[in-house]
Length: 312
Image 1: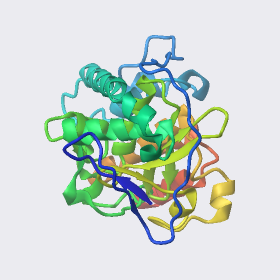
Image 2: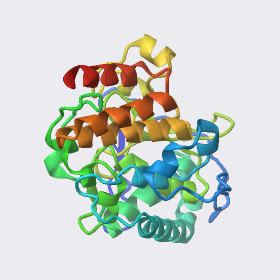
Image 3: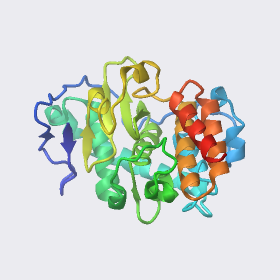
């Protein structure tokens, strides 16, 4: 594990490593500072959940992960009167701030790349997380430090308030979230900057992954700790819950999610929030939609079957 903690300067030069964990030296990616990602979704984007759920996986591809996440909060406890478009503008502003700080501090990487694992990906993510945590005060909600299963629709307090598990909790006044929302924030901001970031599922946990198109640069970024924390895939095979090799081969975990897969995950989280607030039939509908988008993911089917039994 590598961890960088925002300090009074932009970065600290200290690195904490778990015993026996090697530091991976990464290949430098040459990116143009300020590069903006070109949206692939050319149609008028959906503004409500009904419109969103009419789309096929092919139609969803390339849609803003921030929009997907925020639209899935519709009607949830803690998301009353949420203005999705204003929330998206906040994401745009935050991305502009990260872009500015990345450009302003790029000399640090050019002069001392060894301080950043000789990886431009590492440098850029460190700037992003420093800006979000130090300057914008984004943090993990200390009352939600636990490891519930997103497939367990009775996980209680963790899912009760949508602000803890969706982006709007991070973008609001308190600016707090959990492993269900912080990695989504990293991906949403990074894609606005042209970064090759993906959302990845471990068992009951999300993390972000930087992966270059040539496969030479691959960096897992965890959202559950202060600072930039990176882990190998092997770490997530046993944390927070063990993952079987068959589950990995079947594509259930540790793979870069396509847009439809991202939406399916957000619908599962939506189902958890609905279920713990007593809206079981709506939770079942959310699980049905998740299964439609990702029919090969057995954990969705299992959760749906369990939910069916509870409604009999």
